[in-house]
Image 1 (tube, rainbow, N blue to C red):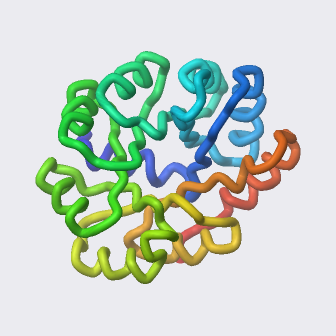
Image 2: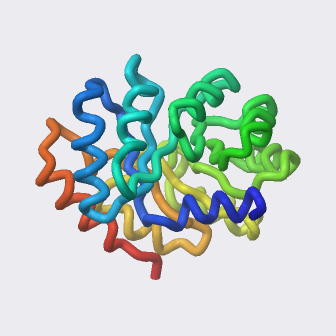
Length: 207
């Protein structure tokens, strides 16, 4: 399977990838179970907390969970994430060392881009799948439409500022394979609420 095919498999599993900031390892498995129960099995655990790698390990034990690491900033972060069980890597930006490390570890890599220059550097590295980040503050849907009109073979996962209300419009774009969102787990953790939100998000489809 090519690198592009591997990423497409990640990006098309679910219309919404929950972006997770977990501060308590004890919540890892219940949270993953609630999300999977609602139909969202692709989970991005951001490396924004001291326990993030342990959270990845715990969530990876949940049946049906396909867990990756987000906010990966450098090759060391990537290596530690893969050792913890990450099955894909998401970064807020794009660097050649990080792209090389992902290739060396044979792990799907979804780097963040914000403009045409970022995308062109990604193309030079053999990449065609990107996170458009931060999506809303970078011009939102009009900006992404403009970029997609130039880079027709590129597909995106917009993340940053997307809400339950705006997600369907983003997903209606032909260039968008999925979106990243934090609204599904916003607020104090409640399994029933998370599962309900996940169920609604899992039903979103591109037109």
